[in-house]
Length: 164
Image (cartoon, rainbow, N blue to C red):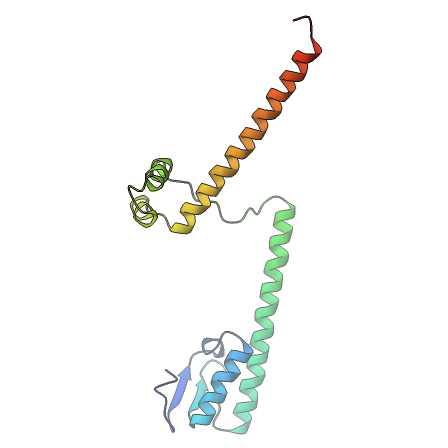
């Protein structure tokens, strides 16, 4: 839209928040429009930047909109922290690994199929594939450590009963 705007054009938006994601972004766009000689009208706020009053009000409203957004994000973070503290917020649930993941891992190791092709067939992304493999390795290490500690405990018990 900005690349097509020419001197004398007027850009009309329903709300100021529709033109930029942050105050700096918004002001950068507005400066670009001003340098091109393009007008700007925000319908919901009744702002027309063709006058100095409209320009001032537009910048003031943009500042207030960014402040409001910051307050919303702050309240959201506080709400999430309270929910986590109460055990009610657990975040996004983890996707399940496909049932045939291990067979595809073996096939990839043997060079029968590429990781990309395996991921396409399973309907998962490459990052999910590698994340699931890491999770399996981690579980294997934990299981191995648990088994080792169990065996170590049994060996100690056996050593304590020398008559057996």
